Image (cartoon, rainbow, N blue to C red; front, side, top):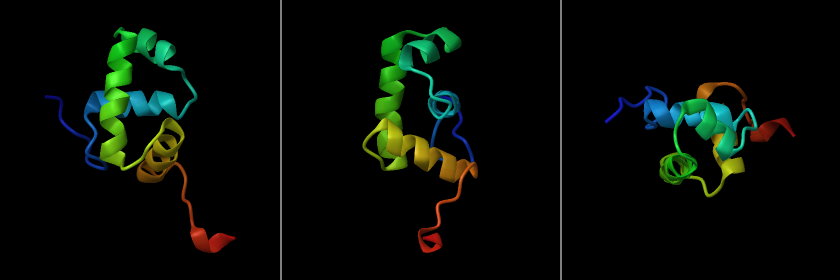
Length: 78
């Protein structure tokens, strides 16, 4: 089992996948970049969603960017 990241419960590989997801890469591109199969990326994403408590790729991207400090969503700023 890969060690999880300090900021999330994501494994190192899941973290790598999410870094590519937030950059707008498609699953096939991610699979090619990481030299894994397309279905492996899909399975990782299926495992990531409950860990981040989200339901889809867009929510996962936003949550990941919040967790990693790439964006800060402040509901009071409207």
